[in-house]
Image (cartoon, rainbow, N blue to C red; front, side, top):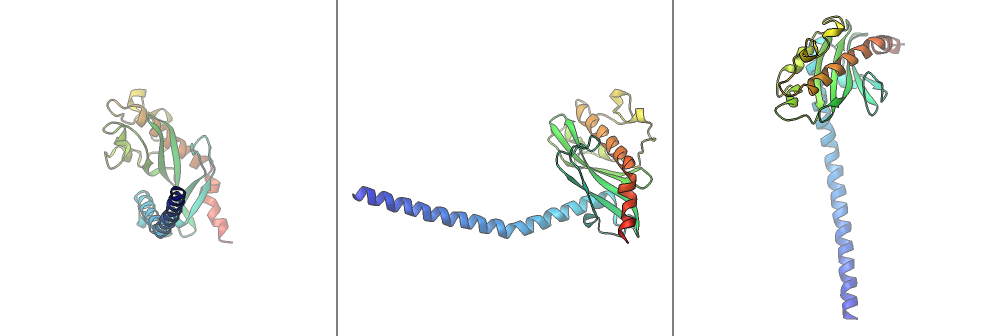
Length: 212
C-alpha cells in the first residue's frame, strides 16, 4: 500500500512539474516571439535596402509587397513568396523577387533578385543555402563579392548565351572546384529577370491603379 501511495504522489508531482514547465516554456515563447519577429523584420528590411538603397525610392520597401505563387517555373518557389516594390511617387522604380535555385550542390539556394524598371539587375542577395564552406559558399556576400557580378546585367547584356558560367561558355566566373553552385545561381537570376519581364504589367504597372 505504501508503495502505491508513493507511486501516486510521485506521478502527481511529475504532472505538476510538467504543467509548470509547459507553462514556463509557453510564457517564454510568448515573451520572445515579438522581439524575434521585430529582429527578423529589421534584418529583412536591411537586406532589401542593400538592393534598392534609400535614395532610389520614397516608400517603405518592406511594407509594399506582392504575393507570388509557389512552383512558378521561373521563380522556383516551393511555397508562396513575397516580393517587394520600390516606388518613386506613384511609379514603380523596381521590384525585388524571391527566387529559389533548386539545383544547388547541397540543396535549395534561396535568393532575392532586384530588377529595376529598365530590366536591369539592381542587386542579388542570398537568403539561405547549404553549400560547401570554402567552395560553394562564395555566393554569400560575406564570403566573396561574386554575387555583385550580376549588378546592372540584363537579358541582352550579356546576350542569352552569356548567362552561364565560364566553364559552360558564359560570362560568369565559376569557383574552383565548385561549378554546380554558381551555375545554379546564374540560371535562377536569369529566370527571375525573365519573370519580371513576362509579368511586367502586374509588377510595374498595377500600383498606379491602386491609387483610385
